[in-house]
Amino acid sequence: MTRFTGKALPLTESGFRAALDLAGLSDPVADAPRLWAVIEVETRGFGFDARRRPRLLFERHVFRRETGGAYDAEAPDLSHPTPGGYGAEAAQYGRLARALALCARDGRGEEPALRSASWGLGQVMGFNAAWLGFGSAAAMVEAMRDAEDAQLRAAAAFIGARGLARALRAGDWGAVARAYNGNGPAASGYAERLRQAHARLVARGMPDLALRTVQAALLYCGFDPRGVDGLPGPNTRRAIRAWRLSVGVGEGETLDETLRDALMRQAELAG
Image (cartoon, rainbow, N blue to C red; front, top):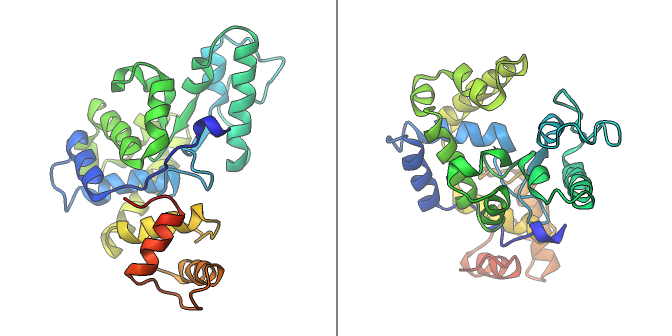
């Protein structure tokens, strides 16, 4: 679905700092791993897929609510009273496309389908768009296509509007989990994942955003580093080696400034 493909610019230091402020997290040292724990659990740390589209998860129970159950019989995998039935991550845009087609057929417009998915780095639900300052879910998605900074801004606005900064600072992961997932049985598991992610970040330090940008560039160029996480490792080194071989600059597993600039230009991430 090319309409969802954008510039897909990775997160910047200034974008992350702005998100901390917007979320009401005023200590850049102590609060950074708290915000990043939410990012890591929601999207494994990166807001775009390899085709430069915002990561999304289509929620069948929300689509049912948005359309009054009109498609329960015709498309029960897309419209159902209970959450679940997600399928593979790679299938989510296909599910969205089917929902958009059903709504277009029946003159509903695209909003019910767009409101029924969670989007980007913080997996913000489309139905939250208006009270986060967007005119529509479509406007929110449009902003999220081009940059993770915009994706994280929306997530930070959600955290700030829900008063979750206090819970994050207190390590009340249960309160954060309930804000994201309600009071159902999934909340306790989600809270534990947040706690573990935060503990890892405190122990190892924050992701290296410059390395993360290199990993994103490799992914966009077809050399999957098996994670855009800002952490050095063998998969990133293998991806760098494969890219270097593809452009005929030797078999090394590192990038000097000249090679990094060449990679950024190829990935269309050069400033």
